[in-house]
Amino acid sequence: MKLQKGKVYLVGAGPGDPGLITVKGLQCIQQADVIIYDFLAAPQLLKSAAKDAEIIYVGKKGGDHTLSQGGINALIVKKAQEGLAVTRLKGGDPFIFGRGGEEAETLVENDIPFEIVPGVSSAIAAPAYAGIPLTHRTFNSTLAFITGHEDPAKDASRINWEALAKGIETIVFLMGVKNLPNITRRLVEHGMAPDTPVALVQWGTTPRQKTVTGTLRNIVEQVQSAGLSSPAITVVGHVVQLRETLKWFETRPLMGKEIIVTRAREQASDLVNLLSDLGAQCLECPTIKVVPPDDFAPLDRAIENIGAYDWLIFTSINGVNFFFERLYALGKDVRVLHQLKTASIGPATSGRLLEFGIRSDILPESFRAESIVAAFSSRNVDRCRILLPRAKEARPILPVELRKMGALVDEVAAYRTRADRENVDQLLTCLEEKSIDLITFTSSSTVSNFKSLLPAEKFEALMAGVTVAVIGPITEETARKLGFDVHIVADTFTIEGLCDAIVRYYTQ
Image 1 (cartoon, rainbow, N blue to C red):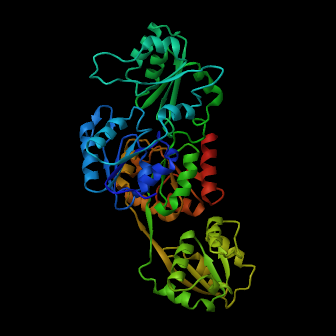
Image 2: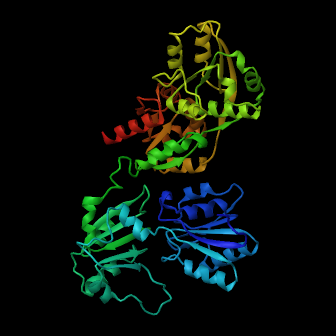
Image 3: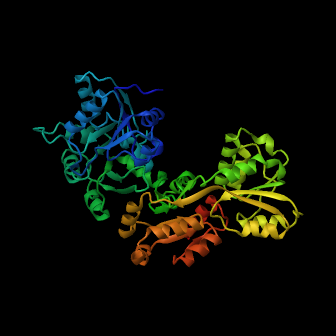
C-alpha cells in the first residue's frame, strides 16, 4: 500500500490500546505527509510516523477545543489541496459518533479523494476489556449504541426512550458521564427496572482503565463516589453481571502503576512491552542515547586485523550491532570470524550474536563483567589476543582482570552513550504531581544521567514516595551512592528478571 498525494485517509485509531490499530491504519500513519489527530488517539501510534511528517493536534477535551469542527474540516482540506497525503487519525471508529461523516462530506464538497479506514470502537472494546460481552444468548438478543450527549442545537431529543427502555436488552451510551443522571432517570421513567445492572468503563483498554458497576437505581452515586469522569462508556443490561466472572484486564499485577523507563530509546521497547503487558502505564524517559564513537578508526583497524585475534568478547547488544555495522561497512562478512571464539554477557547479547550466525562459546550464568572473568579463569588465555568492542564509558574491570591472566586485550570504543533530555519537562511534571509509582534503572549510566536531570535542591522532594527498581547490584551500588533509595533489585540481571522482581514486590 502506498498513500496517494492530495488524498485524505480518515483512520480509526482504536479505543486507546495502540495494539488495537488495524494493519491498514498503521500503514496510513507510517506513510502520511501530515497526521491530524484527536485527543483519544493513542500517542504511541505517532511514534510510527515518518520523521519528516507534520503532526498536528486538534483534540477536544471536556469542552476545550483546540479547533472547532469547522476549523478541523478547513485544515484537512487545506493540507490535501497542497498535494499532501493526509491521515486524519480519530479515536475509535471515524463513523461511530466520531464526526467522520461530517468530515467526509466536506471532502466531497471540495472534490478531494478520500478513504475510510475503520477502527475498533470503544463501544465494543471497552466492555470487552472490562469483561462484559455485549451479547450473550442467556441475557440478550438486542443491542443498541446511543450517544450520551446529543447535538445541543437539536430542538428535541431524537432518542426514543420508551423503545429503549422496553425493547432493547443491552444499551451502550458513549460520552455520557455528565448526562448519566438524565440517562438513568429517563430509562426508569419509561419502564426499565431500577435494579437493571449498569457499568461505566473509564479510559477503556488503557492502563488507566477503571470500571464501576451498580444498578440504574444507584449507579450515579457509585460513579460520584469513585470520582469517575470522561472519557467513559456506559453499559446498561444484564450482561454486566458477567463482569465478575470474566474480568481479566484490570486483574493484571501492575494495573494502573505509572512507571518511568530510563533505558535508551533504541532498547526500551522490550521493557516497555513487558511492563505494559503486566498492566503498567509507562513513561519513556531515556536518560542515555547510544551514538557512534568520536572516531571509528580504532574499531576499523581491529576489524581489518581480525585474523590476529583469538577471542571476541561482547558485553551488550549495542556492541554487537556497531561491530557488525562496521564489519559490513568495510566490505567484510562473518566468514572472516571463522577462527575466533566468542563470549557474551547475557542471553540478549548472545541471542543478537546468534542472529549473525555465531554461537557464543562462553555465556556465563551471571550477566555482568565479573562473570566473564570467572568463566575465563578456567581457561588458559596467556598470550591470547582478545578484542573487546564496547562502550567508551564501560567499567574497566574486564580488561584489567583479563590482562592479569596474561591476555593481550585490545579495548576499542564501538559506541558511546551521552545524556538524553527527551521528555524532561513531562518527567518533572509527573514527579511534582506525585503520579509516578516506580522508576526503573537498567545500568549505572541511566542512574547518573537521570540524577543529572533533576534539580539538586528538589531531588529529595521529587523522589519522595517513588519506588526504585534496578537490574542488578552494580546499578544498585551506583544508585545508592547518588542518594537514591533502592527498593527492588533483580535476582536475574535481565529485563525479564527485573520485571519478575517488580511483580513480586507489588504482589507481596
